[in-house]
Amino acid sequence: MAKTPNKEKSYKKYLESQCSEQWRKHLELTLSDPPGRVRAYVYWHLNNKHKRSMYKPAPYLTHPSCPYQLELLRLRTQHTIHIIPSHLHYTFRAPRADYQDRVCPHCLDKGTTVLGDEIHIICHCPATKGVLQQFTAKFQGLTRLLDLPPFASFTQDEKTRMVLGNPPPQVLQKGLQEWIMEATPICSKFAYALRMHVTSLHPAVVDMSSDDEAALSDGPIATMISRLFYFHLVSNQRGRPQMAPCLYLLTPQDNR
Image 1 (cartoon, rainbow, N blue to C red):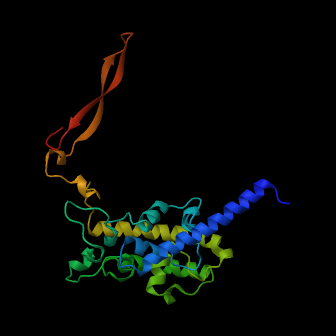
Image 2: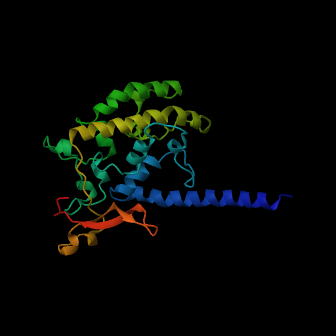
């Protein structure tokens, strides 16, 4: 007869698998929705045969020491709004464009209007697809090392998923750890190279706009006030000098 702790552990695993499956099915329903950020994330990162547990991190996050891993995390979680235009999730002092209207600025400069999503920036855009071309030899070597079909034979969708750190369908469960160790560094370096290349084309403008429309106001509240600390010398109870923090208010009109 199984011990109580073992029963609890087994039941926990059972519940996790059932909840993970239901959670995944709920997210996969968005694949039939109009294009959007949630649908894009599900399509690129969850729509695969591996069906990893939703209670466990994505494989690339389990690499013990990978340079530029944060770059890959930002790219996958749609943080890089100046690299992938469709990732835009807050306003720049103007009404936020609908997802389908978040066009590629590089192609717009050439007179072409096309959605600036992941596959366009990585594989199609003439201004940015050169980054993938620079890494093609590395990904080709990776597929050869892991005994996968040639990288050149992958479809554009499969290439996009792979460079974003998702294992191809041909990677078996027993080979997943090898994929993590070999592929994650290459994918992370690709994410870093893509950011550096796009930034060199259009230097990012830092904007503190909010996703909350109520945060925008035409009244005096709209004036940004930054709380800044500085330190000055004071005398303590024993008459000895010490540094004490002091708070002042700095408005955009100040020249300090």
